[in-house]
Image 1 (cartoon, rainbow, N blue to C red):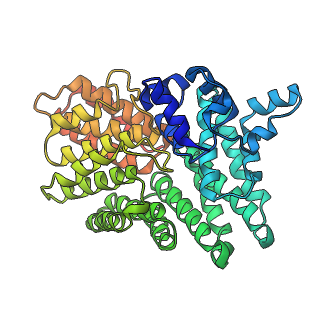
Image 2 (image 1 turned 90 degrees about the vertical axis):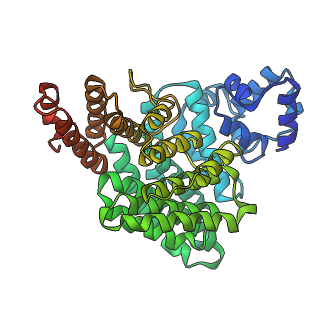
Image 3 (image 1 turned 135 degrees about the vertical axis):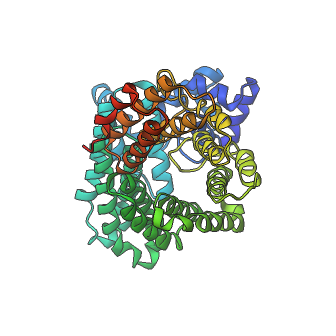
Length: 444
């Protein structure tokens, strides 16, 4: 794929990447991946590109991969294949020899195409579950001669776990957690093989991070720490993205555990150090994530330093990488945390307002349900610290937060929400509107 030709067509129209992405019904992140030739373009979007750029298919300077070859079928089969997400995801494991990261990029590309064409979340969830189950049940680790095919299944399945973990349904989070933990076990034989060690290390690191993040919500901080420590272990032999993200995952695991929260800052500092050492091979957007996390940890430890947050802002829109999270949303959430720790609660509220509509509680950016709850929780806490705090607004925010926490059954956020309730009870003692919320503080 010749991404420069694709970018030139966009520039000839006088469009920014944001403008072109909006016309295509995709994210800017996906368009950047196409223009940088990081992932193939699905057939549907090839035709759409020809429409908006007013050109022929050969003018795009791309080639059609195996997916497009598969689409050369009789009409009924083509229609079924185009509409059935599960089938399309499963065919990715039969791609021609490629890197595991290419398989994962293609999974996300198909999901974004599906999201642009329909709002059928039930089919999306079921397709991701099938992808995970297929890899676990259908790939035998004993078939070492077929290790590339098996690892491709695992790569696609781990990406499915990452996507499913963004859901607002507890069963999806549990499915993703159990899937990732099982895949982690199945990867062990590949970690011992010299020819598959690095790619297996990358996948093992990703699976461990999924378990650490979801385990924090489903099982508690100790489980999160255990899996994050495993991620760091596997990350030593993985590419720089996974190595850095494993350190960030362990930093957050320590951050949320009162007994070892002091260990969070050194891990964030180490992540920044590793990132700087390997800067030539690190995507720019990764800096935004790492430095925004470092800013939070520094602010929590009363270290006055604007440099980390400034560096995060400079890098956050400079590129994309494999993370499923919107880098702007990650930056804003961490910026709000930093401002809140510094005592600048009005600015923290202004920042979270870019993420959450405080009237409808809907998101303004692409966020997982876990991130939405984190933003709601932060908004609630900051509103309580504001000089002009409003009882009605605080009650509404807390109620929406706790309702969402209970629906997701997040152990981590539940404890945080209960603590926030006690703060409200102290601020507005014996107020019936606060007392009426007490039943929500009972564990499910």
